[in-house]
Image (cartoon, helix red, strand yellow):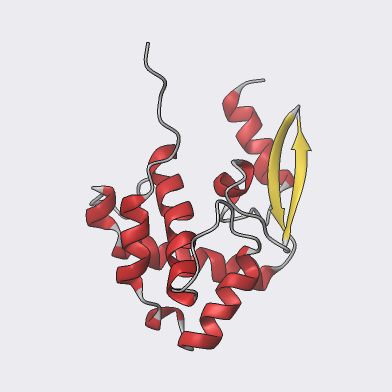
Length: 150
């Protein structure tokens, strides 16, 4: 299938896409508001709630602004390459978990993104009050999958 045709079909079928889709597909997290969908033998993730999608998109926007230096990205409007998007998503969630549970080790996979963000909103009242320095430390620390040596 042509990539452009697939993207058009995907956007038409999945109007409320999951902001953390890359992380969910790589099994670094799960979410109570996410539902996997299949299109032409490929998988995607649909968000079940407008509220959940909106709060996740806002968090990723704020994280991206705060993580410009860590991601070596100056242009806020460009689409991030896959590796940088994964660093932002996975590292941001791990940082949020670390900020909320400083006495616990960070799990390999975050259980519920929606619940984690809601818990953080209860603790810090607003997204602007999140401890972004802690989150950015985890964004910087996240390395993702390393290529094998030949």
